[in-house]
Length: 160
Image (cartoon, rainbow, N blue to C red):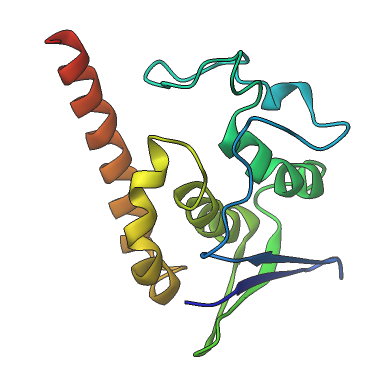
């Protein structure tokens, strides 16, 4: 699977475009670009089941991956209307929706492709995600899978 491009055309005329390469891992958390936000620090609200150690990974891989998206959309209201395009090598998908719907789809893919040792287990779903990027069923499936994974890890931790 090749590059996936998300394009957000907001009703104000602003356009945001993000390229996601499913075959290229972005951030490990071991290094970060100059000027990364403080909330990308691994010690800032670290997940309970995160196996990464701050001395080895000063930054959360997921936070570094979504930082640019968060900065671009931080001043916009989630209910703003947008025309969201998702372009893959095979086809293009289009939906008129609010920003949060389009962002939820893109962030789900970015998070699954991240170098997070927990959430990267969703990586095999990337082909399915590319076909159903803006569908409600996929959002529900990923959310349920994540919750199930967290419960399983919590269950395993209590008995180990």
